[in-house]
Image 1: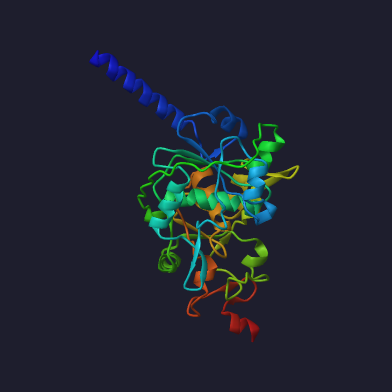
Image 2: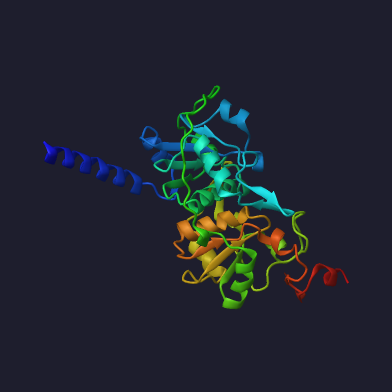
Length: 318
């Protein structure tokens, strides 16, 4: 009897392992449709006004059956501190937020962006990175987001959503996945790869975000614009995996080198982090969540403009 029980438990454990290993960091709608009824699977919709993705009302009007909602922009996934926007909040409130969504350490989570644009995908990538920072590996993003789900004709639910039972989520911090300003400064000396995820006009200093105090980029950075990773299929945005190797080669990136991604406020950079770490298989990738907003707080830190070398904003104006 005991041997039978042990075998049964072992079989259940092996089944769970197979189920978990079947989930890659980027899943297709067909995969999610097959697994919607799996135990411990949580579908987390994070759409917001970014790229006209919607809000809670949009979610209640049309959503993936059984999914739960958390606004990326409004529910506490990022915070402002010391005049810098987009920073990682403290671990305790993040753990409480995740637990309030009915997610615990045994949950398999699929994050659903709106699927309406490249910047919208950054919402899912940032939440994915946050789960990874907190030590949770059973996490994925739905390629194409909700727009892709609808476009492919899968079932859609509507109507008010019921509250979920809160669960306990215990974080185990992975500090190696987030880079501080001091670590970025050191990376410049250690020849680590700094990867700017912003469009080229930001990279060369022609355009500046209101959150950033000087134009240009961190000296020595390479440019891998976040939006180049996507293809538009009739209004639904999917990751262009086939062209990824070419984009990495064009940016002259070494997959074996320590790599730190950044942007203006750690949003677009999450897409580059996800693409390099979780899709391309780079082994040692962190994200600088403070990004250029934090880098330019101090005038002592250099900023590079494409055609004018190493200089600060005042020098450029002169």
